Length: 319
Image 1: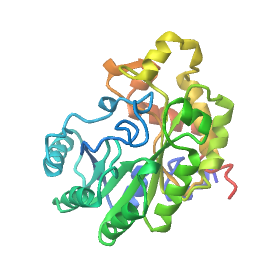
Image 2 (image 1 turned 90 degrees about the vertical axis):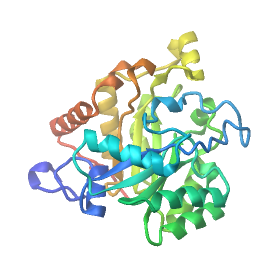
Image 3 (image 1 turned 120 degrees about the horizontal axis):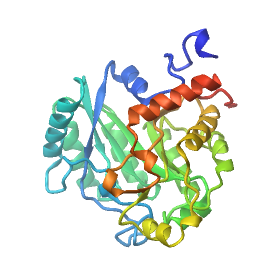
């Protein structure tokens, strides 16, 4: 189908299945995410499975200013609603996004209290729980499934790559198969699952990226986030980059757009795409600097390029 023929399979004229449209279909209007920092930590930092964390990770690079672990969940929601009301048009409701670190990395009682506090706050339509595949087990799935009986509950898994070699090189502490199993178990329990991938990890061939669309499409995912690799200050990867910049093959903006479009053409059109680039405070980004472009400008450039190529998400998808 082309744009000239009318509506794409997901119900609008945008050339990819956007998360904003998915949310609007689900809730009947705009619902704003509010980030929550619970301070639960990460098993790849506290010694549960490893130490040091992922080599690219600095949570300060993507944690909003209103998120502080010395504030309760309710206080963070209150501040978040105030922040977004000042900046954006009115939403019909909000989703509490447990974002920083691994938000299933605790005991059931603690997790229930955190999730329940968010769900009981006025105008909260549901929760999104960001975590790792190695923090998903039967007890946590049961808890999330129980809460989803009367609320929207989704889980966002940091998968990052389909290549175990790359996962090991950035100290992820899990395999791709671990992610597959976590996603399948959550989906089988009726919980919408999102996944996060980083494109351009050290040692990754740009030629491999288009094929990721086919591999990822085999997973029972509802939503996806893609980010270009960014070198962030105060990370082991930043030290690695300073000592051996030739070991990195960072994208130019035009390269990234074309490679991402190739991936998108092969991606299951039923999966909603929430993000395709990363953003971080300018003073924390070492490279590539094009990531400092406004997200709206990047999205416009992507759609313009897709229009030039007369292509769309799933054009080459084969179930």
